Length: 337
Ligand code: SF4
Image (cartoon, rainbow, N blue to C red; front, side, top):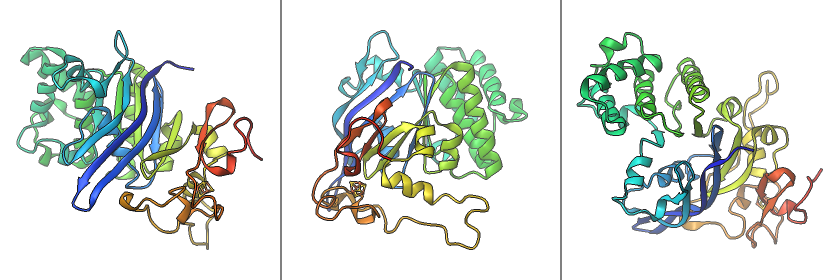
């Protein structure tokens, strides 16, 4: 087993709204191992992106990180990111040097009034200390590396002059410019066509192999998970409800939510003439979290009088995989048939 690079424990992040405090992340526990890919999956509104932003303390008001620890093991000594002072140099180093982040919707994340080259050169100068000339040369090199053709010319292009795929590649170049130990990719391919998506995934895999970089990949696309993941964390309503290797999740999912997600993936030939199964209902409003297991109103395996009353325990199986579900609470070892 690899060394842990990042450990999240008991993370709670919430947002103040006119209707009350909304708990978007509710006690998340996750570990990212050096050089490996952790995919975080779940429907929209499950807290995946807020968890990612909490790691770098990028949650803006009215949001707040209320409790928990985010331990970074990539330095000389491990430290808790959440307890650092805002001006602590370790926090500045973490943002961009140690951890690169690709945000959703690159066109909205890149500054529209500055060329992609200017944005990349600025990142290079801040994170690597290069002078302007060296940073420009490196920017052209990086844009070529992420597959932008004619990088010498495109380095001076503005985001609005580039396609969505090109902007995403520019974002990846910025995120990778300091050769981070961890890349957080928040739905990096959602808005892209399938051909560009495949190219971006190949690119991330290539760069990961080259730099032994860990990747935390946030997605709701189980096809992407099958291609990219070593480990999978399934989130529901701000909590991790199942953690396992990618092989375990696809061959033997434990949590009914994971099973339902997998059932709703179309399989060529299998679903001909049938409606694709869906998960009934929607993710509840965290302001009105259901009592007991928060998935119980949508769960086809719910046990009346139990799942609607008691919080399910986290069960640890042989090999270390986990599931939060009462179906397994009489066993902490061995799998139920
Ligand atoms: Fe379904 Fe009950 Fe398990 Fe929740 S605890 S996932 S409701 S069986």
